[in-house]
Length: 379
Image 1 (cartoon, rainbow, N blue to C red):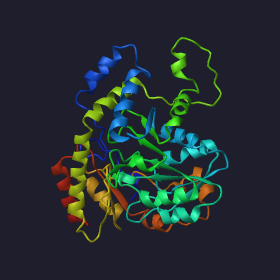
Image 2: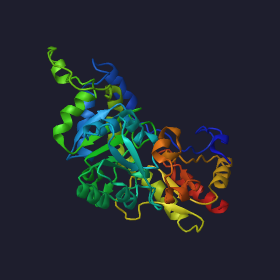
Image 3: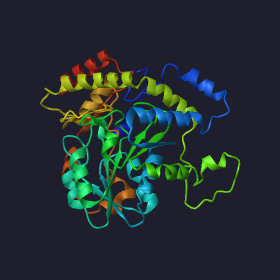
């Protein structure tokens, strides 16, 4: 059974894997923005950044972007990464984590994942460090925090930058603190199916606040917008910049979403916990979850089992959509030269056994209980 053999489901047909959360006042708020002077980058972008910072990254500068991938690329530039440098990154993640390295000529060194979390394995990271290693990238898979204590120890000991891809981990905490406290750079995604959405967008959180001005310049062609908007065009462009800004329409949607975030996360955790409680006793299934109880963000719920394809097919017959969502990056042709001859013991074990269940605000408690019941009957 191959994933491509399964038709795309409509939410009218059953329980879909992903569904965007659109806040109740979004249309009204966006219509108001449409009637102002600003629909591109304007005051709503500034407002969104300020609210986001106060809620999730009080000790960081926040710079919004057009996508989470934009934010990642900016973080790699701000970290001083240059052609020929080495970066250690997880073999299992959305390709957005690693594609920007291809833009930059960075040498990728893939690390294995932990068997119980799919997060980057610190033991694998340590083995890959050389004198050319300039950064480690971790990804909080599904909203479960990585072992930030160990990763920080490794990076500080080797004077390496730690960058966290938090695209799936909005609202996650580690040892009671926001996950932005543990990385030099943290990025978030507001793509359509994330906890909150700006239709597409991202946020870069920067520990070193001295880098904020540079971040804002290079997200806008290398131009200082503050100086330009004063009506005087005397400022030089002396570094390569990009068109990576968020716009006020997206920011307005983001602001309304943040107002509902607490209830969004609460609901997601409720669905997540129903799966965890109902499936943990099934001897044929391993549930990927936050074993340390650090403060998971419940973006997706992943199970590991030998009969993954069989279960997926049977659930689809009952109008329950599931998928693998992400795949190991070393199998993609664009990354082959960085993975040739490399072995990843844990990823090899997991690659054909994992399945993601629906977790979003349109999944009801009854839906989740029904899915648990079906799985336990099938497997």
